[in-house]
Length: 186
Image (cartoon, rainbow, N blue to C red; front, top):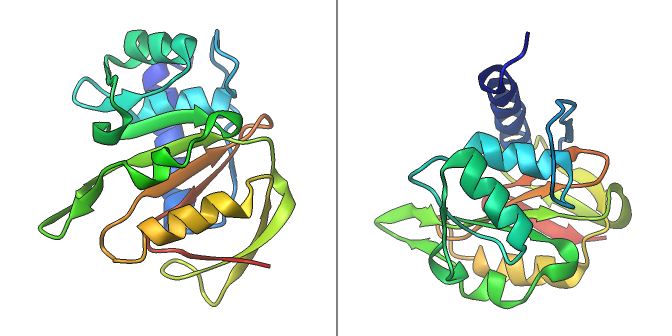
């Protein structure tokens, strides 16, 4: 019998694999009672990473309530000081990239992670990833517009400062793009 502890342990391993190999797609196959209109992958990723010391922002009221109940995470009314932003691609705003925590040189880990539920991983605009965890380069396709990556790249230009992205889709595909990864539009 799989408990939520076993489920989140498995998902954590998948997230570590995805984070250490940018561009690699993990499929989260575990099932969850999902009362939101986000993908199961997005909900389960948040359930795995959030606890009662994590602050998060989501403009989606249902997702905010689910995450508060399921994780004990601290809903934040101000996205600019939240540890995580949970949003759909359609609800993204430029401010989410420009005004979030990007860390400071003495504590670069004090930055935000954007968990974005997009339309498709594997279809759409082509991108080339390079950097740590990638032998030479990796080509990916995402429904994610290049204008968002332009904002992300601007925020991540002063390493070790920046933001990390976790992308999920309706097919429960999951991809992590750390701040150390260079993203080019093809």
